[in-house]
Length: 159
Image 1 (cartoon, rainbow, N blue to C red):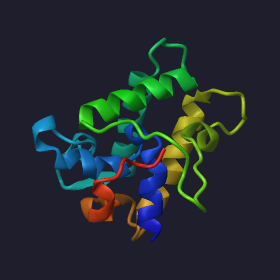
Image 2 (image 1 turned 30 degrees about the vertical axis):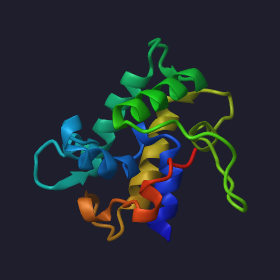
Image 3 (image 1 turned 30 degrees about the horizontal axis):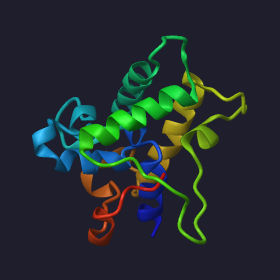
Image 4 (image 1 turned 90 degrees about the vertical axis):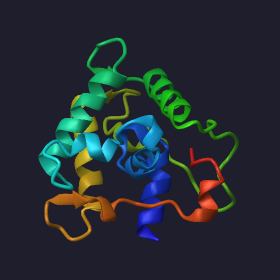
């Protein structure tokens, strides 16, 4: 249940979440997935440092205007690009009954100024790493990554 919840939350902003890494890794025709790209030394694990380095690169890529903060427009464009790369439609509509969706902006924007600074982005990444590191060994194995259930694969990811 915990991993499924993490996947749904990370689906909001899959570009920044490793929940999308497994999904991206499964698309062999789309090149190396996020997990493989983050695993710089190729040992099959993503260390906290590799994870942080990967997210720093993501931040720079998403920050289209180079102002050192992410705004909602940049997040939306990054999300659209991810869905297009994965060949999946953007989710539409409201959350299912009884489920509340929180956008990445709501979760990461600690000072609620409508922008995500690199510090806020880093803090969100540290929280995510801690949640994903099931055994607390300071590194992520591919089997610690959330996996989509078969019945969810036909449905668009949560928004």
